[in-house]
Structures are given as structure tokens and as C-alpha cells.
Amino acid sequence: MNIPTIPISMLLATGPFLAELLVGTLLFSTRFRRRKHYYIRLTVSFFLEMTLGSLIYYLCYFSGLWLIRNTLCYLLLFALSLFSPLFCFDERPTTLVLCGVSGYMTQHIGAQILQMLRLWEPISGSDYRIEPARLVHIYLIEFITFVLISTVVYFLFARRTIHTTHSKSVERSMLWLSVTTLTVVLVLSSARDAFTEESYHLMLISRLLSIFCCTFLLYIRSDILEKSRLAQEREQLRLLYEQERKQYEQSRENIELINIKCHDLRHRIESWEQKQGQVPDNEIRELKHLIGIYDSTVKTGNDTLDTILTGHSLYCEKHGIRLSCMVDGNALSFLPVGDICSLFGNALENAIEAVSRLEHPEDRNISFLVKESRGMLVINIDNYFRNSPVFEDNLPKSTKGNNNWHGYGLKSIRRTAEQYGGEVTILTDEMFHLNILIPLPAKETAQL
Image (cartoon, rainbow, N blue to C red; front, side, top):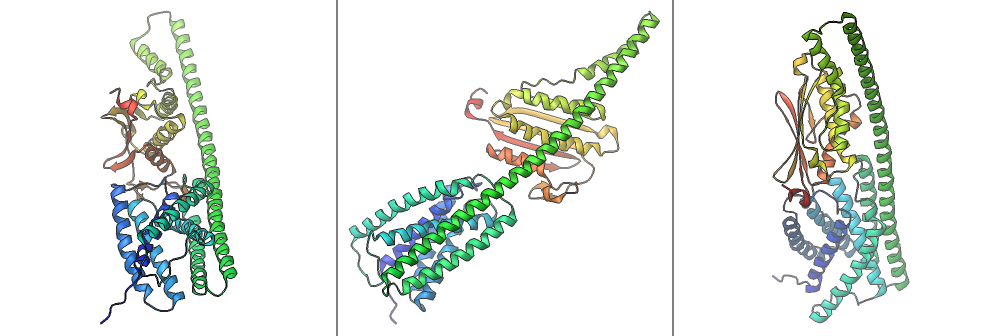
């Protein structure tokens, strides 16, 4: 039984092809969350793709009509190339597949430009022997050209959309559009290759059409995702406005509380003036308690956190909530104002909202801890709660009516922590424990 042989150049072609697909995909995923042992995963997955890719190419080369086997081969190679991003990144599968399609479009643009420029003669199926020097020359030119094209694609398209995530509906729509376009491009390219000897001009026009389709798809992708990002920002601004309105209402309540206490103090002083005698001890204690209201200003060493805690302390005083704080504000010096507000404002509001529902006043306690420990910023917020939360994506779902934005505060906390390489964990027993760990910058850890 004679086993068919395949030119070594055909098998070697899968390596650069898969490498270009991987590089194209990585252009659109530079800010994705990486899994542990990322570089080991990336290396292992690529060599597995190389091995299986050569086998797929071998099987497809000796089967069926060229149009069918060529289309099927590259579809299978593309599907195989998705293993690396799925294995290396902790993101939604639709997001990774969409990036894989964008990577394929980048690779396809480069391949078509190289063929049009005729930087080398295409390797045909009849080439059973190729000189090593010529092979190195071919791959070197291909590498340089692809680097240039990838750089252009990154600055024109990829960089506009790699910093944000998008809704599932937007990504699903983009995914179907991308996969459909990819399939059409593959079929047309295979048909062109099958009849490439019949008309040079038709082949040239077909390659130009492929470049246009891929470039247009990348443009549509970046444009739609950019508009989606702007829509998300508008929604976040709306939520921020609602939060500011809520803070205004809280500040108004605080002013009302201060006015009431001032009124009480005035009457107490007038009463003592009328008595013209020694003030009873219980009156002194009550006076100290009232004055303590004005001493609610918290001094932690961080002005932003002081403002947040002062406002919440006054609110807790009015509503019978005990807020216990042990805070080293100096540990927050590396965080900008916006991120401090996102972390602590949302966390304290969630805790206050939870204990406000409790029937027994003695359970309305919130413990708040911020400290440095072994090069980490440690944030712990503990409070009692009434009903056991239902978790989704490792975060408790909101008990509010709008499920489209459930857990927005906790999602904001987690994203802020992950931005600095940290993590958020939530534990529940008889209390709700929110734990945040963020690595301190080098200049911070040097001071420990």
C-alpha cells in the first residue's frame, strides 16, 4: 500500500499561518485577563496547534475537490487557532472568538498583499524540493511584511477597542457578522485559487476584494464596539448622576441632623442659664454625646477617604448604625480619587443598605478595616445581612428591581481592584465579608 506523500513546504506552511493567526488575535486581546502560567499555556497551545494543523493540512490535501478541501482546511485551521486564546485568557468565549476572527482578517490582508506584490513565487503543490536558503528568504519577507501590516492594523483598529468590554448582545451580533464574512472570504479565496491560471486580472481583482472585505470588517468591528463603549460610558454617567443625587439627599439629611442637634444644644444652654446652678452629671454626659455628633469628621490620612467616611458616619449616626473604622489612609496614596470613590463609596453604600433592613438595632453594625500587610493593601468590610444572597459570576445579585444593572457597585469594585492586579472575594456566614487585596507598588512596599 502506497502512502501519499506531501511536499514538506505544504506542511511547513501551517506553522507561519497559525503563528500569524495567533499574533493577529493577540493584537486585539492585549488587555484581557490572563490565566495563571500564561506564557507556558501560550507555548504549549501553539505547539499543539502546529502538530494538529499539519495533520489537518495533510488530510485535506489528498481529499476531494480543491474548492471544498481548501475551504474546509482553512476553516478547520481557524477553529484550531482558537484553542490558544480560549486556553490562555479568562474572558467570555464570544469575546475570544471575535478576536480570533479579527486576527484571521489581519492575517488574510497580509497574505493577499504579499501575493499581489509577488514578493516571491507561490509554492505550488508540485514543489517536492525547496532550497533551504529560498525557504528562509520567503519566510523572512513574509515576517517583515506581516509585522508592518499588523502594526498598521493595531493603530487603526485594535487599539480603539481593547480597553473596554462590551455587552453580550453587541458581541453576539458582531460574532455572527464576522463569522459570516469570514466564511464568504474563505469560499471566494478558494474558488480564486482553483482558477488562478485562467485570468490574472480576475485573480488580482479577487485579491483586492478580499482585502477590502477584511479591512471593512475590521473597520465595522472597531466602529460598532467604539459606539458600544460610548453608550456604556453614557450609562455610567447616568448612574453617576443618580449616585450624586443620592449623595446630595444624604448631605441634606446630614445638614438636617446638624440643625436638630444645634437646636437641642441651644435649648440645653438656655435651660442651664435659667437654673443658674450646677449642671447635673447626666446633662454633661448628654452634652458630650451631642457634641460628639460634630466630631464625626474622620481623619485617616487620606483626604478623599476622610470625606467619604465623614458623610457616611453622619448618615449612620442618624439611622442608628454603628460604623467601626480602623483605617490607614496613607496606604491609599497610590490610588487616584476616582478609584478610591469607586472602591469605598460603593462598598460602604452596600453595607449600609444591607444593615438598614435589619430589624434588631444591635445587628446594625459595620466593621471597616484598611491596612498594609506584606506588600498588599488589605480592605475588609463586614456587616450583618438579612437574606442569603444569590451569586452570579461570583458576585451577589442585587435585590433591587432593575436586573439589567444588578451588582453594578460590586462589579465596579472588582474591576477597579483587577485594574491594579488585585482581587475581590466575598464570603458569607452569619455576616457578609467583602475582602479586597491589591498589590502595593514597589515604592510603597519599600517603605514597609
